[in-house]
Image 1 (tube, protein in one colour):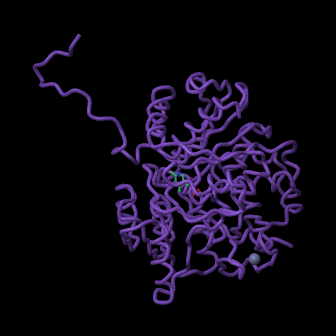
Image 2 (cartoon, helix red, strand yellow; image 1 turned 120 degrees about the vertical axis):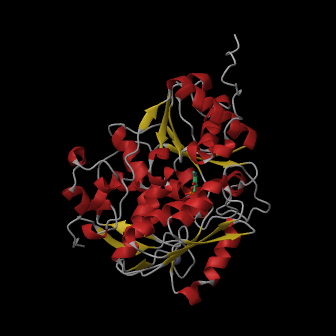
Image 3 (tube, protein in one colour; image 1 turned 90 degrees about the vertical axis):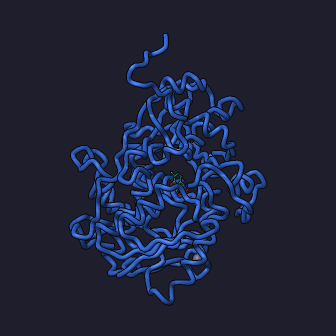
Length: 408
Ligand SMILES: *Cc1c(COP(=O)(O)O)cnc(C)c1O
Ligand SMILES: [Zn+2]
């Protein structure tokens, strides 16, 4: 299929990964009739012909550098705050303390709104604008609300958001600040989701909930493209991803398949490892049980708010990604998470988010268990900045009066 716009997108159609049904790409769509999320499919032969990987070198340093494999066709519809192409930092001191000599941190905390949710929001909002959507609605655990509120504001699109009443304070504030019509729900993201779903007929707004909207995954998949490009097209042994709904890990897996089809990469894929919190670990339990899908987790509780997702719509895709790449699934405690935040700040100067800290704790666990060898090249995704969570920081240092002396 020919691309039409000057961005060179080779988007061809939407496809159901469960039953194989295809849908036209250029009108708003949610899920398949069978209930599965839809995935964007491209004419990858055309993309490869138009974009040899060497041509990336001269391109803009954000995720739009991969325009041929993104869904937005018209440059006028791109809503950007400079998202993507985040640093991939070596972490030698942290690695040494964990027994991993080739440890890396992809620092998604440097994205607009401080998390990788900016990637999904940039592409999702841009595509909604391109398809003529007039208003958006979505439930969120917190950071997606903040990101979508920012990009919706920049696009001039109204947005309705519902989130748990105990979502991190920053998420409640950043969403309101950017003008989204925001509601707090005494419950979990699943309760917020039901509330937003019921509002549909009244508001007429497009349902942009995680994986009910096919394009935020396209934004998040660019993490996979960037990791390959930043390592000079040689793939790491493993990538550790803190999974809530799991969109990022499905996206990275999709990116790996696309890059292979375009001839950009070859050889065994990185093992995709997911980490969840002990207090909400539906995907970890499903992985251990050998199940194809997860069951609803009751009483979800963890300091890592982004991981407090009791049931993910794309659970079967997450489990496939982990299994087909020889990965695994790990659960860590909130104490492990707090310790990993401190350790990473002291070793590398990075205040990472609790979800990223869960991934660091998982790296330690998998080295101890022997799943990782000492020399494996392991990438931890730090999905957001710890600066968004001052309430999780250490207590105040000692306070002195102006006439006091610093103790020896
Ligand atoms: C949303 C979120 C996650 C989990 O992302 P999913 O795509 O839902 O798996 C992890 N970390 C942070 C900081 C988040 O905001
Ligand atoms: Zn289907």
